[in-house]
Image (cartoon, rainbow, N blue to C red; front, side):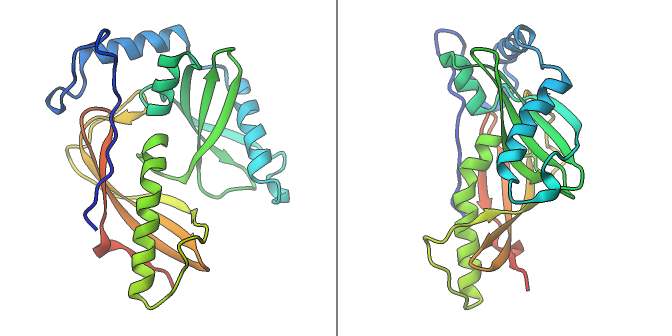
Length: 236
């Protein structure tokens, strides 16, 4: 499957000059993102843990060992350039956002990444981004999930396994398969340059399909994606 998914962070033309792939880290854009982060720095660990714990309680309510699980923060990094956070900052509904990677002791064996949103009234809300390890940011994962689901459907059909389109699918524990030498650093939650491949386990119809998703940053705050069908496999 060679179809791609791409999105752009559109900046108001009255504020910024256009940004091209050749100028991925546009100085005006990065200066504005820095200004926003200086105005709304990351909250303390205890406030972050409280926001995350509320979401954990909702997501894992059926898992006894997850109730009251100890939350160990591994990493906190700005997510301001993610489309959801960026748009929220522009329209005034958000002050800032951060990607927070945690370990949930006695609950999840893999790290779990959340997006902690600081709303206009300074209150915090956490949403789960993914389990496992991924370079894709929240809005990119959301944009790519349907494509990965379709890739899983194709892989099942090739094995002679049927699955109705309306069946729900769940995203398993993600992992990085490979990255190219040109992969750029994280800048406010996203990568502006480079390519990488991730393995996305799609759980549906009683099967798990490890879908290989190849990403290439587009230089404008988005990314192209395609399903690497030659690397995609149905687990026994």
